[in-house]
Length: 204
Image (cartoon, rainbow, N blue to C red):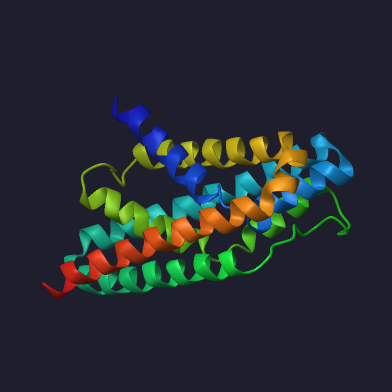
C-alpha cells in the first residue's frame, strides 16, 4: 500500500503543478496544432523525462534537511519565501496573456521538450518544498525504494497531463486565456494562504 501511495503522491503533485497553462504545456498545444499530435507527444515525452532527475534531486535534498534538524529553521524560512514568490509568480502570470512557444523553433520535438523542461528553474524548488511538507506530515518517505516510486509517479503525472494537452490542443487553444486567468488566480491565492500559515507557524 505504501508503494502505491508514493506513486500516487508523485502523480498528483506533478499533474496538479502542470495544469496551469505555462511554457511547457502551451508549447505541447502549439506543437500538436502546427506539427501534428505525434510531434506534440514526442515533445511531451521529452519534457516529462526531465522531470525525473528534477524530482529525484529535490527528494535527496529533502532527506538531507530532515536528517539535519539544525537547518530546519532555515528551510522553513526559505519555504515561506518560496511560497510567497510562487504566489506572486502565478498572480503575474494571471495578469498577462500567454502564448505557447516553440512553434517556429527548429529541431526535433523530443529534444526541444527536454531542453525547455530543463530550463524550468522552479521545478526543483517546487518539489523540494512540497516533498519536505509531505515528509513532515508522515506521508512521504525519502528513502529507497520510495524515492524511485515517487519519481515514477511524477513522470507518469507529468506525461499524463501533457498527453491531455496534446489530445485536446484545439479546444485548449481557444480556451487557454480563460483557463490561465482563473487557475493562476486560484493558485496564487493558494500559495499566499500557505505562505501566511507557514509564517504564523514560524513566528510561533
